Image (cartoon, rainbow, N blue to C red; front, side, top):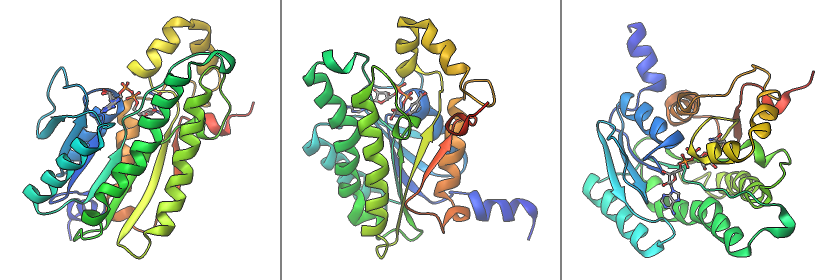
Length: 254
Ligand code: NAD
């Protein structure tokens, strides 16, 4: 066996078909691009269309909080492709306000997209993933905020801690259904999501940088690389785990 065949056998995704949510920009875009480069066919389900198309990614405009429409789209993808091998729950939102002032409708919207949607999409994909000729995979994007306290984004922290609970629960629930369930916890990666928070409060950006062991912000591709690893054969013994990709931020001492 050549070394490239060996590497392909561990990390290649030729023949795999799956969904990445929120892949029109930011981390999702990079995740989708990594997966197509490894041979997968990727459907991007996002409420906005990308400014510039990633080659071989099929973009479908859908608001994931519209459950009926989302289910229709997932059923259609699975019937067109005759298979569905992975779901990457990446779409997420945040909003900055002190807890005592947090508008409750904003709180509910964050809960809906960051947590309930992850549960609902996982359930919608379940019947297809369990029939995957590979191992069916669910990867959800959690956050450092699942593990550490952050001011002014408490509802976001709640949802991301929820994603790790959901990941462990589903990993157990579906362990005999040919499905592995894991999550990835990015550290600080500069995207539109946190650019808005940092723009409003530059001292927050400085404080964040000072908490990263490696001393610099991550890139979307750092997250894409971890998702790629978690979808390939090399990770077949991993389930129920949350993997930090954060330049050492979670374990930062001094
Ligand atoms: P982003 O705002 O750049 O991208 C999020 C994408 O989700 C957008 O394309 C948006 O249109 C889509 N989306 C939002 N609501 C949707 C809905 N109702 N239906 C369909 N699509 C919807 O954000 P990002 O930084 O790329 O974040 C991606 C994920 O990574 C999120 O879950 C976020 O919480 C998580 N995360 C990001 C960071 C970071 O530093 N950027 C750190 C930790 C976790």
